[in-house]
Length: 320
Image 1 (tube, rainbow, N blue to C red):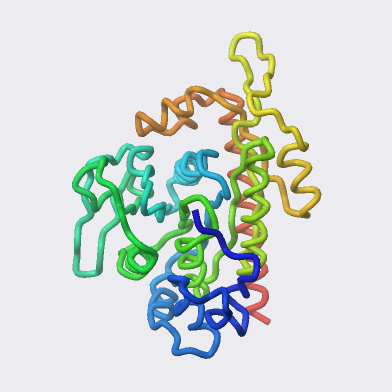
Image 2: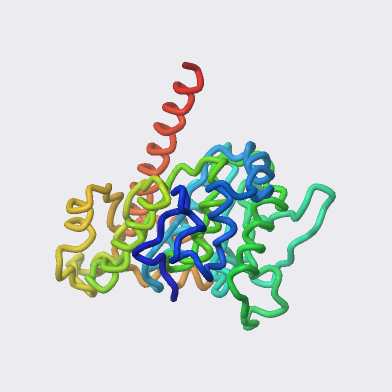
């Protein structure tokens, strides 16, 4: 898995796309568009397209298998419980699109209309887009190099008829590579509220999350906060808590204190979460009394509070 090199100048640097470390990077032209080169016209087109989207949230993780897509799905489910809000979930994990399965949409197809691709809807107020809808079979492998992935992300942002959306949640693949650079750069003129970063308690996960936080700083992506997933297991019978993944270095809490980023909350393990995802159902409604459900709801509320506060500040600046 490729990562942003230590000497990457960052997408907003005057050297973006020009430095020695940029040579051979699939995103070189895209990064250079903000550093004196001819700008990619898609950036302005996407800015116009995103005018109808109030809040844009990226869900990131340095390590695979920490529950990032599971969190993205349940963030969408939780926000969509307010029927007055319109929610969209965009899956840019091009090589491992698991969102269609988790949302109960496996086998669905994307339809074309005069205004672009139409999202696939779970509910009237919850639309989903994923490369998984474009494959002939869920077992088909997507074997693409960086430029083709970037083109697909551009198409999702520019050519999908999202309509009036309150929250667009973007589920990303693990790491700090092509897809992450592309989504940040293409949305650079459209304003991203921030990133939610998912980790598990053990150091092997936290090590990669620190790189993800460094990536956010380099590309000037605000960090909404960190979620510690699989944070202990609470026995449904005796209510005792066991540490399945021991936080040998203090877990996300200590890391967040050290790096001065918010800890949004900790979600304990619950076997029903995996079962709900496999069945394409919302764990929040299937198991409403689980400690994990309570944790999810508290985290979702904190994300909404962050976006609301962010919007107030933006409106105040505009009015000034």
